[in-house]
Image 1: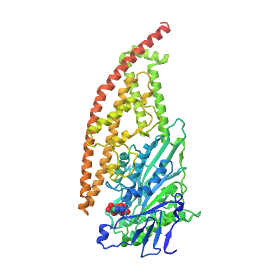
Image 2: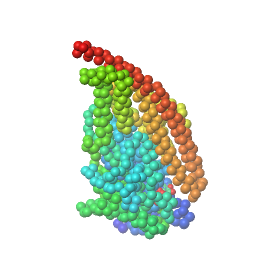
Image 3: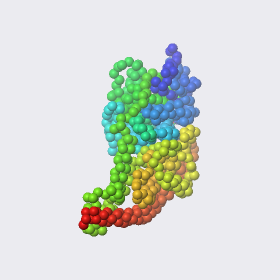
Image 4: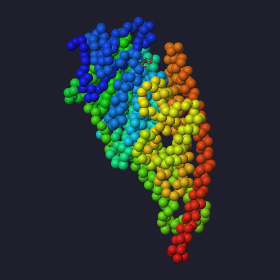
Length: 608
Ligand SMILES: Nc1ncnc2c1ncn2[C@@H]1O[C@H](COP(=O)(O)OP(=O)(O)OP(=O)(O)O)[C@@H](O)[C@H]1O
């Protein structure tokens, strides 16, 4: 019994999923004369011939040559799928410095990590679920020296943890709605710029903070019957290194190290207590990390722990600690249940309600202007007519402006809600709008240097570079589309004149959205490039090709960006010059004529 520790994993699904990922010996370890001590023994065991117990068993053990995609399939995909069905999910990477946590969670251009793979999967799953509509938001934070900082908003420092009926949350954290995988990744790239990293003895880019990237997934049925919204959170966590602070060289690093250890120690204690299964006090409040993970760890959701380890003899003891931690975690029981969101809390519902009340308002606006104007209004209009054509025109113009503002608000809200293009549920969709979208895609493909035709794909496997994992932003926009069809479907007469304005502004909005995404991707590429160039000092040959490819890709995206910007300028000028002005004039003339007629009718009726 002393020899082998194997947890009963037959309960899987009810306990934390624990996987171990080995990395290969690094150049530095080889040069230092390190030997292999811990090694994988089959798919489930980790073994070492120099310690007792000499073997540990887990749900799955991945050897040093396993690709991140394979780790993702086992350790993260089920959690992501659960999150899409309303069950909270947490995936975290735990291990000593330089054992491969960041490599596993973030990865790089050539080998995307769990986070980009999960993002891509979420969008594929939306595409696979035509019966529901989704609203996705992301947040990104770090816990540095026990202080929570918002990585999406540099002014959001030292944020507080609060609690409500749904669990703990960070007060005031910025949440961004995301429309495509590239869009979500651009927020991570921006966030990375604010993260605390520092080099230590082992790792030039050691993470000095824990980071939590969260996707908030809200969905509701698209049928007529509203059955409430579903809401879940998917937390993807890259922990700071778990090594002891004695290895740190400077005062600052020692201080960071002791904070890192405090939260990891608390995590260990919490997991230890949970694994005992007895009703004792669990010290979630002793660290920010455990406080934030409280609802996940206390059993409300799926939890997957990926422990990254190095086989190197110099890390034998630390690796042993990681394995013991992983073993304890295996004993924690989880009872995942589905979340339903109360109506008032649902953002998707809020948007839908807002859209429908705005549509109603717009409808009333039109009826008031075109048809059943009240006698009182006609009297006022008549007076205004008498007072002068100029004043009348300006009031009509104001009303047109207000109407246009309403239209654009409806469009903006509608665009945030994502639905699959594979839908078979009829929605209020204007055929001219769809044609128009197609024509945008055709035009842009001509000007784009890429000839990709892939939409957000059903197939979520076998892509091995980050760029191929991420669809072209143009395709992404056309692959998923916003939900409620075209707001112009609420129009009565006068539809034709509005139609030009809608499609023009729609076109412009799409182009602007694409520019934002491309800019995000360029930022992401540039920050990866920066890291690669720094790495190339150590390994010039190994990184040369990657650097060249990445530079080429960034250049292509820049060219594409410039082409889009040019289009926006042209499109903006054209729409102002043609559509709006001419239409507005025509509408005004038409409305003035109608007003005159009504005023005349009224005069006849009241017998003047
Ligand atoms: N499975 C792997 N295969 C190949 N290389 C790997 C693997 N895991 C990690 N590496 C490499 O090892 C180095 C250290 O990895 P990484 O930065 O991910 O460690 P870390 O655990 O995040 O460290 P820290 O806690 O200091 O941030 C990197 O150069 C990374 O590319």
